[in-house]
Length: 115
Length: 113
Image: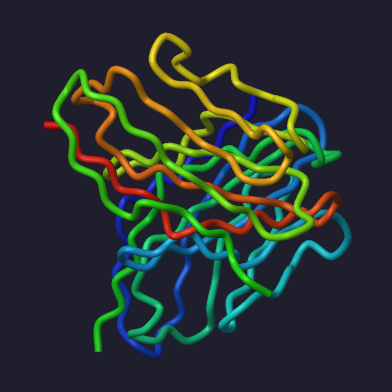
């Protein structure tokens, strides 16, 4: 079985400050890890993924995430938050190789960036 | 490229009625998924297709939910009869083989009264 935990329902940060959205996972074997963002009344949009290689992956809109195998974590980060980053963020996992297994999503973290 | 199309965007029905949702994936994407997203929760997989074959339907409530992808392209998800707890957004996603990126449609929001 595979699972994802997002321990924070909401993260509040001031514009211009760095942000971190936490994610831990459980999967048999090597993980493929993902972050998706959801804006109101919109579907999920892909932000970034870790498949293999460098533990720090960079994605859309200045976001990055760090894979930590020993801590089974894949936290989402951004050096300087924008008000427009306010949205719902989902972490997801699938077991490698990724072709046949669907993604399992966490419960989501609402990011609120204050001006 | 065109995205994943879903319809209808919104549907309100009474409990015990039936409803169907349609999804047209991105051209060339062999894998299609239906997820259920209840308010305040993350998306939960209902069914995964590879072309027109079912890969995983272990979490599909088969007594009331059914899905098909007859020609390996469009897909339909049906609920009959609906229950109050089926109120959710039904998300369709497609994936190009080996790409490891799911592209989601805007979703179909179902309200069961």
